[in-house]
Length: 344
Image (tube, rainbow, N blue to C red; front, side):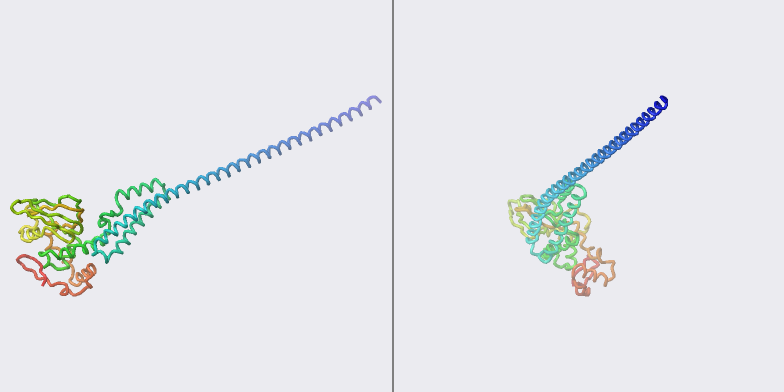
């Protein structure tokens, strides 16, 4: 009987023990589940914090980038404002340059449009460089522009397209060429060619010397702006004079070239009989001895190899002559003795 009791007690104890182990195991499982849940919550919290940090960092970056863009835009606006002011000042000076020359009135708007086009092209380049590269690079473009001078307001002529330069030179210089006695027998067509392609623009500062008495005279000078004093130093025949806008000096060079048997030999140029000194800044065009010597070949060089009709039409297109018949322009006779073309 005692054994049965002991067995029953053992079995009860064992059952309790197993129940306790099961309860402890459940508690441990629950604890582990709670720990896992807590870990998940912590990981989720950390992930959320990381996401929030990333969002904040992105927001800060966007804010900084927006501030930088705004600052850059403000700096660029200030830079371009200053640049545009300078360009407007240049444009006003160019307009003054045009308006000083009444003969340029007919192409005034063409010149203005070309100046505006050059400024717009440069502005687009500066804006593009500022956007694609940096403000520093844009400043470099402006510095380069100032150094190279997109358009020199004091002397804009060299910066215009070739066709415009030639047109300006023709308008300014053709009337002056027609005033030279030795050129009055030349055809207007030839003088147009000379004015467009054979004259060189020259500038002289105030009080500078153009040529001194007794020095070789190597150019015929046409004054388009300014005042030049002329004088001789010989006590026995002292003379003074003044050259101003639309005057010329050096027609004795023409005589020398036309009379010289060796047109290519410029080593024995005539001497200036006067000293020319600038009273103001002077703008002028020079017809050099070398180019004067090419007069006889001018028309042949440009149109001599063309059929007559084609040459006539081309002359009309270039010079606005409405493509008339050759006899309406000129009829040339060639003197075999001096090979000079003359207008009938």
